[in-house]
Amino acid sequence: MAIDNLKQIISFAIKIQKALELSLQDGKFEVKDVATFVPVFLELPNVISAAQAVKSDFKMGMTVNMNELKEHFAKEFDIHDDKLEKKIESSVSFVLGLVEFYHSMKS
Image (cartoon, rainbow, N blue to C red; front, side, top):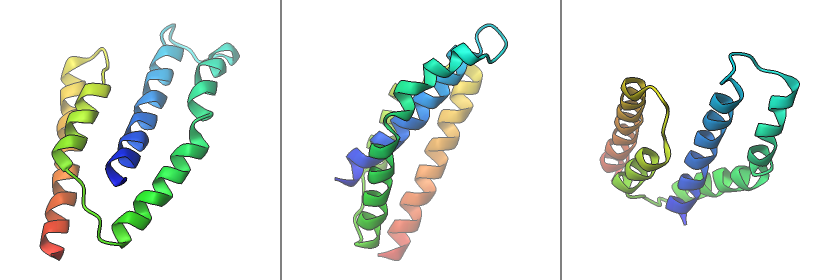
């Protein structure tokens, strides 16, 4: 289902951001920090499959509930800088709104 695949892709991007934030807590990136990314990158084959499925779904005219995606992103995404987090969440919401508008105009 397109919505589940999109959620998987969003969650993957957020996991990369969280791993990066964790690895940079001490202010530098070291070899030991690579271990933080291993579990995330083990998900990459599934994320690539999900992205290919989403592409196929949209080519076939599948639509998704953008509000559900916005809620998923807001729930999963969390950084220490609340102001920056709000800006990023607003930006994602805006982009998803544009996608929704584009699909409504195509119909």
